[in-house]
Image 1 (tube, one colour):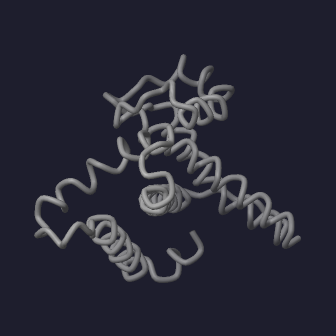
Image 2 (cartoon, rainbow, N blue to C red; image 1 turned 30 degrees about the vertical axis):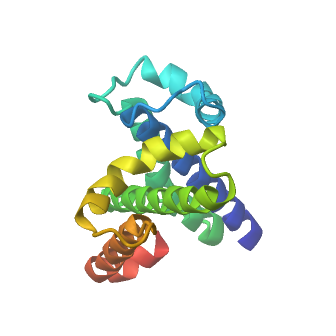
Length: 184
């Protein structure tokens, strides 16, 4: 059972991250001819394409991707309970669990994108096609902090400040929903 639980949880969480990345890339108006953007579109298009005919966009946010990510995060917990304990039940409290799980997944996505951008800035130094998309995604978060921080001898601490803010928000989630936040 542990193997099946791990596989189902990992698949759902990774697909939700890809859906959220698609939403974020559309919101940030990333170059969709980039190889990373094409990978994200090809991975999500078989499900999002037909769903877009029914669910409209909400301004710059892809409503179909957001709805599918919310449905997956809402059904993740009862599905894992069904695998481990054999019972499947739905309740209105799952909507709160879905919203909280979606928020936590968005925070995880921001964390990993900033971390990957920071590491790639040392390795590829802007020569990779993925660097441009990562720059487009993270710059709206990091540039306000960069304007606020004083110059530190050529070292950019804005990524570290954003990650510290994400950690603080994660701890706030643990304080507000102590038993629930850990299981999301």
